Image (cartoon, rainbow, N blue to C red; front, side):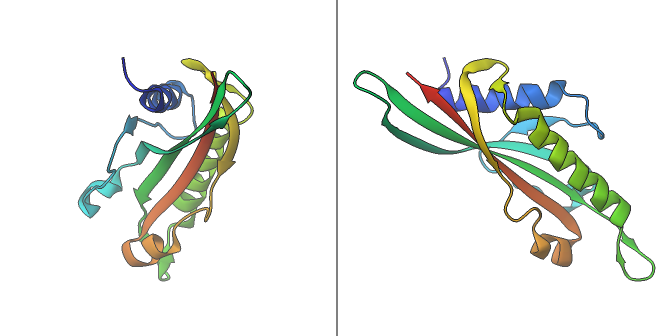
Length: 148
């Protein structure tokens, strides 16, 4: 059996792949989600096990917070006058919000002992990737709590 962290990450992948979103998503779990720039014309949704934080919950139980990163990445085209395809960027921003909505305030389907604690998305997208590579990159960080 896989570690709890991997089971939670795999459950996140399954929820994403089973969701009906504004854009078709095929999520995959990665340890190092690195892609060639030539591959970025297609949407990449990467799920990465990221952090673990444990502490005592009470005399007999521990409380463990698992942080899972979900990266949404895609290169967008340039438009005339010089600039980026704002329609495509707006759609990717919407997708990130939809992904957050899938998990917020809900037990994790496929691993119901994991309870959503918070979502983080700072910054909302990486301006350096956008400027240098015309690539939208957004990183959502979900924290799930398991008490045992």
